[in-house]
Length: 343
Image 1 (cartoon, one colour):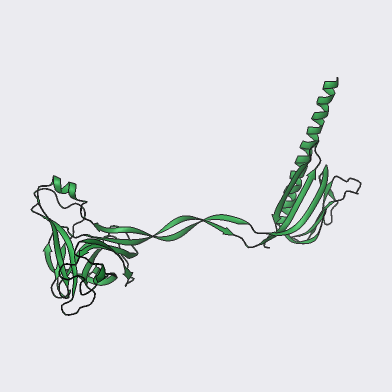
Image 2: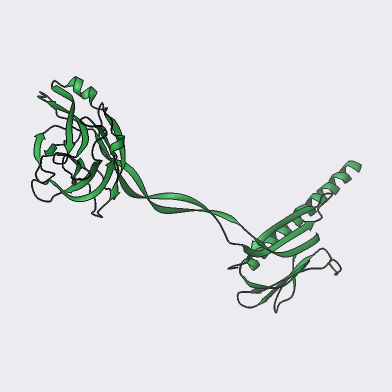
């Protein structure tokens, strides 16, 4: 009988705690709904909160330890009788606070991504060369001076919004340093045959002081000159020339390699035709039909990227609450913050 009595007492305490916990959750749910849709706070004290609803009605929450039911939280809507929403409450407190709340959102943002437009780099065709009966010439060079220019044509395989960077392997042979900077330009081909370099799209410079007597890669930042769109599959030119057309100016040599007399297969990848001009780009002569030249052109593509952005809201005004419920030997506590709408 003694053991059974103890078990029943514990069960009663647990039941009371469970009921009190459910009452507290109901009260918090009602508070969240009322505060979240309130027009303003009309009155706020330690155990009392009065709100003005969106429709203009008064909603009051009251808890009075000296009332007839001292452990009960009441909710009163204007024009209606008070209704109990939680019992077994030992203490209640309300406050109005301003807090700063961080939040994270995901958005689709347009971004520009650099991608390779054309990439003619020595060494990447070695395996193909070994497997193909042909004559391979390497280490050729094109002299760049005030009258003699050289150019390569290429096609874009994707849609680009701009040409951003270029790389070229160049050296100074006749004079170190050269007389002039090496100017690198990207042109859109003329719309009619023979489709030589036409509209200037972007350009950059290899400083004369950076050219030595050995071939080195020079990375160039291209500055956009035209807003002409860059459609996929269009024909473009990269042109190497002195930056200034001065008598006897010299801007270095551009290295190239070529294949001739191939019995089987063709040059891997996109075909490219090397041309040079002896009159500062007025006329161009076809020098070889094989892909050659050491250069790389990089372009910008516009795309949408899902981006996670963490931002901080401006100070947010709201109501804080705290409940203490006597549930058995250890009291239960619930507290939180509910933001007021539009404040």
